[in-house]
Length: 217
Image 1: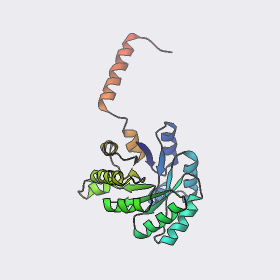
Image 2: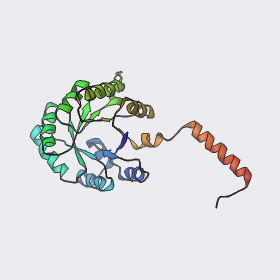
Image 3: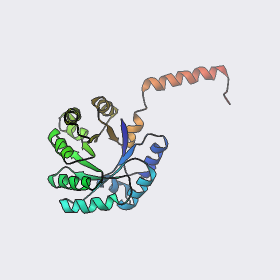
Image 4: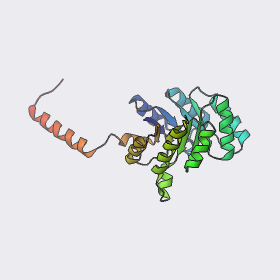
């Protein structure tokens, strides 16, 4: 499974990238606003920092506007992926940009039918939002499972980019369901390494080592 970090915080991206844990980055208008920085400037900085795909989202709501913005974003760097909303206009823009060789990430997917349409429109990635479905009492993981079946049934090359991930359990379930990518907040990604038995074992090892009075250096 590939890990994309869901943030526009360059410091967080740098730390995780240096640890070899970042395969890509996803951003959105809310994350850019939280960073307090210029949209174009921070997008270009992130693209220079990581080798993998960097999703940058359009803000236009009409097809022509999305295509124009998408072309501008794609021109910023070779690893930009244009993020588009899962609307009818967004799907038309997806097809147009895909036909021009521009990679796309269709976002805010909440149903298998929406994901099917995005794949038909040639999306590079589909972003199903697990956590937001869970918030409504709907099993978000079922959407990942259904998309996997549909895409495998028809040989769609669109990659499932599981989004709105809230926990380590979400990550594990996505991996088991066959999502190619999980985009996760930095805190969740760092949290995957933690387990109370690991901490307890390490504490015991260090205590025993201290009793020997030895030093490796």
